[in-house]
Image (cartoon, rainbow, N blue to C red; front, side, top):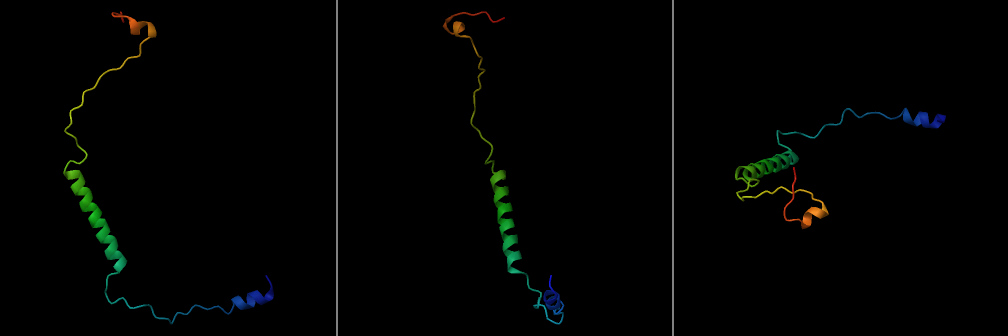
Length: 81
């Protein structure tokens, strides 16, 4: 660093007299939108799960599948034990 750069940096000051914007007790609009979005998502999730959207009344039949040798595929009766 050269001497001229350090001299310029020493002139920098923080303006502490500057006033912050007034709050006036108002709620920030972003917070209201965020809260409304979370509320809508929570109500939607509650309705989705409470009405049984993931449950099903369809009856399903299951079967067991076995691997067989090619010689067993043509046989009418095989002994497996």
